[in-house]
Image 1 (cartoon, helix red, strand yellow):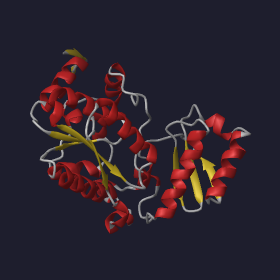
Image 2 (spheres, rainbow, N blue to C red):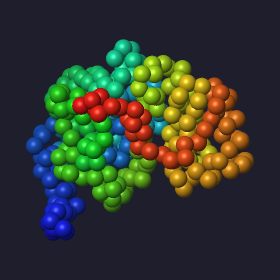
Image 3 (cartoon, rainbow, N blue to C red):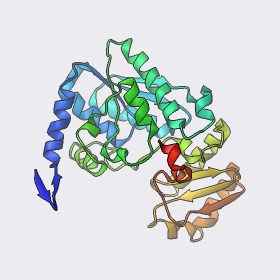
Image 4 (spheres, one colour):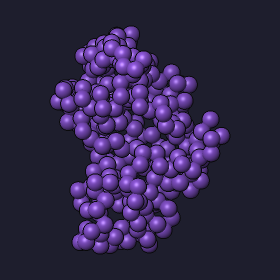
Amino acid sequence: MRRISGFALVSLSLKKTRLIARLKGFEKLAVALSGGVDSALLLAVAHEVIGDGLIAVTAGSPIHPQQELNDAKKIAGMLGITHLVLDSDEMTQPGFLSNTPERCYVCKKHVFSGMLTLIRKTGIRHLAHGANADDVGDYRPGLKAARELGVVAPLMDAELTKPEIRQLARQRGLPVWDKPAMACIATRFPYGTPIVLEKVVQVRDAEQVLAEAGFSGCRVRHHGALARIEVSLEDLPVLIADPMRSRIALRLRQIGFLHICADLEGYVTGSMNRALTPGAKD
């Protein structure tokens, strides 16, 4: 460990050692596998440490793009790990559908509870998820739900950041090492806007249009009749130049949006959280 300006910099090697040591505390473990890079790395390292005592479990739901489930299946299959899929059924939960600032807490409490029930039928008591050190800064009530249920976060415990996780995943040859982060579709709606399946499908289809056009890691925020598109600042000139602009606008109009705009700030993680007052984040 070395120090710069009074701050200790923990080496990546030491963080890997911490992660392995944390995982050695479990004879059996289930990993909540989302299809993203964080849980994929966690699963790969846990497989080396725990071996046959490890399984993966993924929530299947309309609020997650189908590609997420496909990627989760691919990762578990590549590693030779038993993979369970839970019908998480969030769209039946009033506390989720009302879309208050506690939506993520309600959702994670419901999903993790379902996962724990499922894995305990196989004789496994402990569940881990892929939260990392970078997740501490933003408003993430789902972390509170995980802690209350005893769901562990080994990557966070090891203080691994997203760039470090990508680096380790690339070294291991995991195909999702550079996959853009993909939050659930519920994050595309302003708090207080009820979440209904028809609107979820609109967002899913609109983001698929953008993905097929070559925009990676984009978001379509749903503001009623208005679709607010967020892409990287590098991609913004491409989005607003014809013929791309007119083609995207036409496709989103066909999906059901009356007005389509591009956000001049580009893609901003957690941009909907700006509407929260300090008290709502407590």
